[in-house]
Image 1 (cartoon, rainbow, N blue to C red):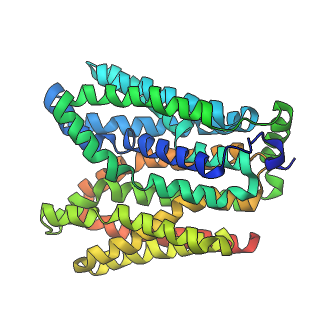
Image 2: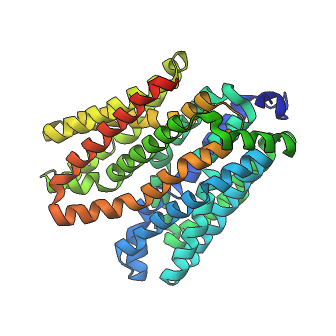
Length: 394
C-alpha cells in the first residue's frame, strides 16, 4: 500500500505546519534529555553530593533504555501511526523529568532516567523519522532534513534556558518546568496537530514487509553497522572532546570555543543537504558525510593546531549523518514497514551510544588521552568502508 494514500492527511494541515511543530518538539526533546546534564550535572552534584560519574550515568541509562525499546516503538508506529507514539513520548519526557526533579536518592534518579529513556525512544529523531515515513512515504526525505535543521538548535537554545531556570528555581524546579512544558505544550502538539493513519490491517501488512527486508539482509547489516560507528564517534566527541583538548594543552576557554563550533557546523551541513542532497541518492550523501567526518578527525589527529577547522569539517559531516540515518533506509527499503525497520536499525546504535563514553574513559585511563583521536580515526575510516560497500545495492 502506498503510504501517502494509506494515511489520513487533512488537506488544510500543510506539511510545513507539521514539520515546524515537530522541529519545535525536537528542540525541546533533545534539550531536556540528551543535553540536559551539560548544565544540570554540577548543580545536582552540589545539592545531592552524588559523584559526577553517578549523575552522568543517568543519560547512559536513558539511552540504553531507549535502545532496548526502539524496535517496539517502530512496530507501534507501523501499526498505530505516529500520533499516539509521539504523544506517548511526550508523556515519557514529562514523567521522567518530573521523576528526576523529585528524586532524593540514586535509585529513584536511575528509575526516572529509565522512564525518560522511553520518552527519548518514542519522541526523538528516530520516532519522528518513522512517523514521517509512515505519513508521507518517499516524499518524507526533505521533511526529515528540515526537522533535523530545527533539532540542530537544541543545545544553542536550551543550554541558556536551562542555566537561567537553574538560577531562578534550582535544578529540581528546572526539571519540573520542563516536565510541565512537555505535558502542556508538546503533548497537545503531538496529539492534535499530527495526522492520523490508515487501518491497523494495512499497517500490519507493512510491518510484515519490514520483517522480510525484501531479501536485502546485507545492506541492512551494513547500515546498522554504520549507524553504530557514527553514533560512537558523535557521542565520544560530544562527551570527551573538551577534556581531551585540555589534556593536549588547550586552555579551558579555547577548548570550549572549539566545541561550540559543532552545533552551527552541523546545521550548515544540513542546510547543504537540504539544498543539494535531494538531487542524488542518499547513499552518496552518506559516503560524503562519512568522508567529511573522517577528514576532520584525521586533521585534528595529525594537526592539533588546526582543531577548529577540523571540527567544522567533522561536524558538517556529522550533521548530514543524522539526516541519512532516516533517509537512506527509506530510499533503500521503501516506506512499507519503514518504522519497524528503523526501530531494528537504531537499537544497536543507541546501546553503543550509551556504552561508548564509559569504554573510552577506561581506555584513556589505561593508555592516556593520546589514544582518543587515533581511535576516532579508525572508527570513521571503518565507517567510510562500510557505507562505500552500500553502492552495490543502491
